[in-house]
Length: 406
Image (cartoon, rainbow, N blue to C red; front, side):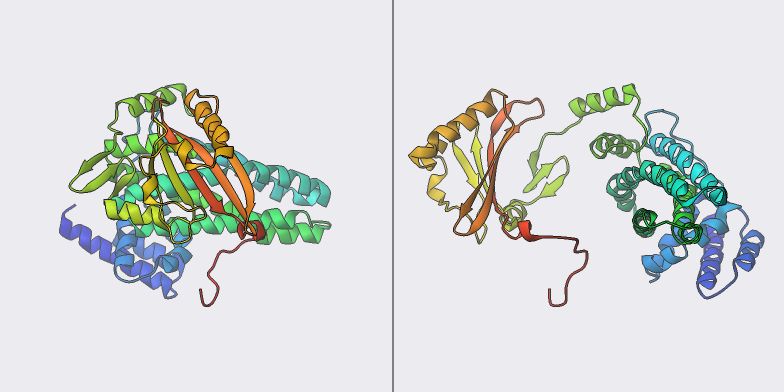
């Protein structure tokens, strides 16, 4: 298809979606799509959604109609999932997880169909068991949000990932609703209401997300991401974890090999501190460390103080005169033995951290020492982190939004 034909096709799709948002019926929209567009690829769908966002439509607005969009394109999608022949490909892991998710949503649907044949207690027990199994879907969504989405956004696909993340949060809310209401089911009427308002919407959204992933997200990802991107996705997935499945043994070996052979060393280039996970200017790094609400002090492998943070409200006094000083000379005599014991345990590998908490001037202070080691486990030094946790001890419940005046 020529670029001109594609632009015309894309404009027709945009017009149909916009009219959907303005009240066009689903049946009429589907008819127009089949007549005026015909088949459409997953990448084209993603490009259309991105174009709508570029034209000023908010991701939240698109999210409201996300399910309608998916159903609209269901009969015309031409999903080409080529490129993931290697069983260690991250897309295969996502798809394998989806198959396991379906093994949970399918009996949920069966439970709904036979709800009238069970007493509320029996229904509640079976629904509780299935919901408990489903909770690990959170890892599936987090891996998308924290690993796959950032790589897509590097190629300009920011809107579609924002929309899908919003749908994840809707599923999370539905899951919490189902869990919280389950214990109160005591009658057939309660069960009917629970099915209609909590369980059915949850199953519908979870299954709908599988469709969106496998017919839109994954094909678009395979078209956009390069081989080196997928290598990083594979490596970083080990940190987040997998839902319902165990990665094949050869994948673990592959990740281990990649970690050893990939260029993971930090470097200084063009006045930037380049790290495997990003880059910062020295000034950015300094102010970032000073912005942390903790006292940081780093002692090198020779027990020499090399750095401390200079935030505005330090807990323990530090002056620049201590840089280059032996750590034992920076503590009162009565605590030197304890400091040396900690450092020795770090060096011989018997300990990786040591924590303490004290009352200081009416405040609860939490202090933790960490052994700092390189990728081969070699001791590089010790990091002391001290934090005033007085306010943290008083926190209860949740806070998800800023209060007025914050």
